[in-house]
Length: 201
Length: 254
Image (cartoon, rainbow over all chains, first blue to last red; front, side, top):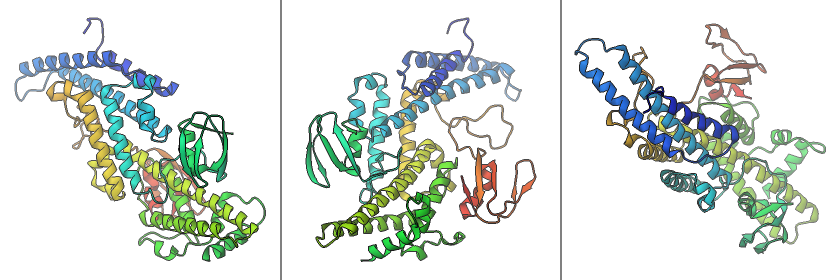
């Protein structure tokens, strides 16, 4: 810990990063170095509190310094947890934005590079959990489908942006090849639009 | 087929060209299961169809900061109804004797089915969002669990475990052992049961717009005054003030 730095300054930086992430609506790279520094700061603070604890006679009121240290420890910890929770929230949003296509996220090198290994684990577990929840509804409806725009038509005209192979639809199986156009039932191909294989015309 | 009868009722109720979605919903044919939907202790709003009920619960859920009571029976009935309608539609579509005019009606019914599904989906996902956000809090609070379905409870506990593990492996295990838990309380608090400061809780003081669906008994505002909402009255109040009115269906959030 540098001599000129105030307690909790790094944690403020970390929280500012979360705020920037929200304001710009982007996922920033996992900031491993600040987190390590804060954890070091926490250990130093813990040692400092232990010193005060030792000099305090049992039964006496602890010195005010101890209260300040304890407050700053809690604050740092809150900031660390808030940073991680904020990121998991964003990861969940990301997951839903692509209609729950986990491979789609994990194969994207740009996104993958911003995640910590624990976050990749988290996404995998999240996917499993959501799939389990979804299976309760699967017969009637797919809860993964988009909820941004209410449906206006049952059919929609789509253009194929990327090959996506043979898909089962109401009209039988269709082999979607690049640049072809199809009139298909929205519910059948909605997930392909979300994942960017098809484009509505 | 009863589908056709229901459909006729809808068009008769719908009136002239371009009635709004809500109008059509209001005039939609009643579900045959409607009588079973009345939940004891909840005043049924007169002439409210299951779909209208769902729409009310959906807007409530979207506006409320806390998780509201799950509507399992209502949802199950609607989903059953949707399934029956879809089956009827399939049957009629495959029938060669179905006339051109009927095909147009079938299409309308299909659009309607998709729209109802949209609302159900949005409703379920709104709840899911809150459950995930407050998962850690939910697992320690028995009261809120009574407002959830079994599947939601299972999802919440899975979520809480995942978040615990994630926070533990990312942060808590590296901290000194005395700091490695999530049970910290505010050291400056003088209250006997200090609030936990590491776990997110729903903010029940968040202001909401409440719309009285009928004359409501007086509620107590935070400044000590009481407010009596007459039917049709709209007020901006903290959520906890009108929570019980919303739960009883006497008011809705808008």
